[in-house]
Amino acid sequence: MSRPSDRLTGIVLAGGQNRRLGRSKPLMLLGGKLMLARVADTLKPICSELILVVRPDQDDDTPDVGQALGMHVVTDTPPHKGPLAALHAGLATSYTTLCFVTGADHPFLSRRLVMAMANVAASNRSAVVPRVDGILHPLHSIYMPSEWAPFTGRSLDEGRSSPRDVIEEAMSKGYPPVSVYTEDEIEAQDPQKLSLFDIDTPDNLGIARRIIAAQRPVLRPDIRHGGL
Image (cartoon, rainbow, N blue to C red; front, top):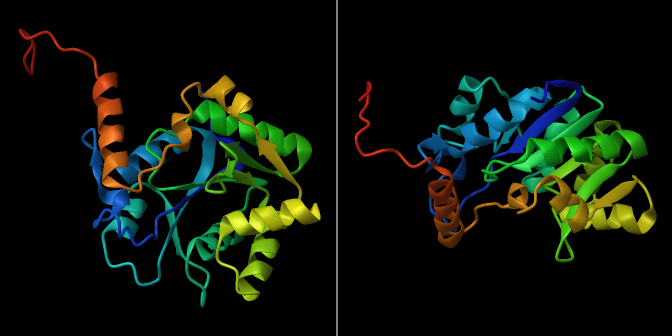
């Protein structure tokens, strides 16, 4: 069983507009459990603190649910908006050496994978960003806030809004250091790569529900609540 790490903060970005699904993803029920609770419960055993980043004008129950889950709730870095502003807000608030950043729509996060990535980051003193099918996943990555909070802050002031663009810029310049986590490395910890699965569309939601249904134990028909 993994234990909380005093070097790792979990940062969960939950301020998206959710236009394609028409409802708040963090508050969706998946297998009888709120999506945000799934993410928080996975990260709590390996993180010393969880930070939830929401929009300043967020009017759903996500901030309240985050507080109920024991998360520290902050808003996007003003006056900016979007995922880069959320990423910066989380990094600027953290106090640990490393941060794992993810979205609130990743219901199958793998603790083994997160810790393996954190070990690489601690060893190489770099951000660790997975790449699958040639695509970088900045919202399933490890960052060193001492380097990446200032870097993302400058990027916001320059008018940038995409975490992926900022990662690619850092890779092209060689600073802040970035280590790409390969598909082979991902599969060694998470063979089906489900940790990187996020829910953006109704089709994604249907797939997630089928995955959870397949994971449920089969109950004997003669078993009822309270016993035989």
